[in-house]
Length: 207
Image (cartoon, rainbow, N blue to C red; front, side, top):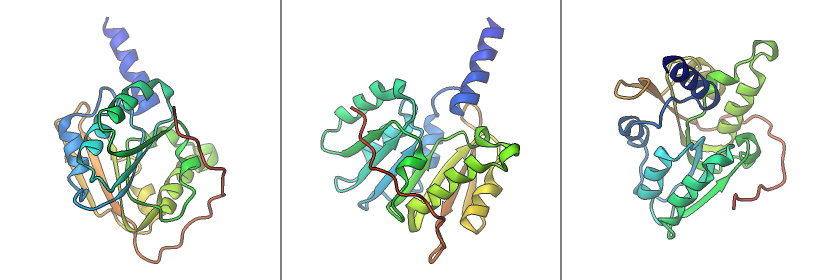
């Protein structure tokens, strides 16, 4: 029994970056930084079953839009259920790699990520895919826009800071989560050079 539990935890961390759904304390720590009184273009990366998604849909203003990027279609039913419960909100779900979605410079006001960044490290390629993702996030965020990311260990803080060319605005610790987590807050500085991102055909929404 314990061996099966260990294997389940190990697989979840490796594949999704999580053990169980984010606690309400972690969700609150992530979203308290967002000004929901404004109309925003929001991107959530790696929704899973929708612990953060549910609060985003509930709190976003009627004039805001939310794009959800979740590569695993197995979570679609949970996300579609949340979308159906708020038919007046502008929400779209995409089952794709986020690098295929972030092709418009400065499009989003807020990008919220639950991606397991540590899993994308690869010494043989000098972390090429990790930096492709982080560069895409920086590219798709407007000047002054907000990037929020959590990790169980501060493994990739310096990588994010390198891509954005500045120190993290804030790093907070959330002990009441399984596992305890760190929340990164990074704003995109003005007049920042954006990396080249190839144009791609528009993605279709998940049905």
